[in-house]
Image (tube, rainbow over all chains, first blue to last red; front, side, top):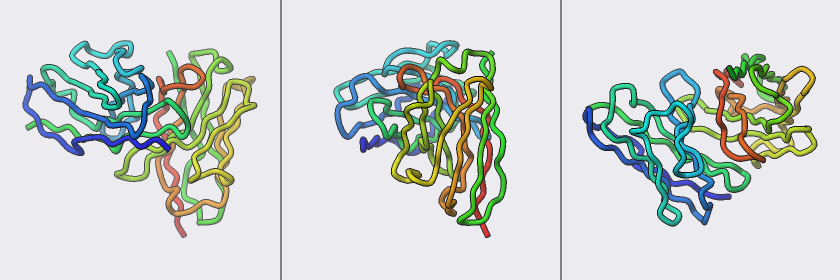
Length: 107
Length: 119
C-alpha cells in the first residue's frame, strides 16, 4: 500500500500569513494527488486535484505543487474561513490512502 | 446541484449487520464510479469501498474485505454498503462520495451517517 505522510499535524498561523502543508508519498504516484478541507461537523470539500489543479469554486489563494514524491498545498494570505483540517489523498492505485491530516488554526 | 444523502446508520451490536444507503441526485449517477469513505471519531479519513459504473468491479481495503459489500442500483440512483460481522473499530461516520474518472479523486461527498458498533 502507498503511505502518505502528511506534515505538520497541526499548525497555528496569523491572518494574511502564507501557510504550507506537505504530503510525502512512499512511492511515485505521479500527479494522482488531491487535497481536501474539512470543517468541524462537515464533510470534506475538494480543493486541489491532479496535484496542481484548482477545483471549481475554490479561491485562488489555494495552490498545489509537486516536487518528486513530495506534494504541497499552499494558502496565500490566510483567511478566517480557511481554518479546519486538511487532508491529502493519493488516487494512483488502490487502496486509495489519505494523509493523516493537518489541523489549521488561527493564531 | 449534485446531492448525496446517506441513510441507514445507527447503533448496532458487534457481530451484527447494517446496510447503508446513499441517494444521489443532480447528475447522471450511472456515469460515475462511487465510493464509501469513513472517519472514526476524532480520526482521519479512510477509504472503504469503490464500485464501477455498472457495478461489475468493486474494490476494498484489507480492513473490510470479506465483510463489507458495495453495490448500486443505477435505476434508482442509489448506492449501498452492506456491512457484516461489524467490529467496534468500524464505528465511524460513513460518507458516500463520487469519484472522478475511472476512478480518481472524490469531487462530491454526502453529509455522512454515523455508525456505532457497541454492545
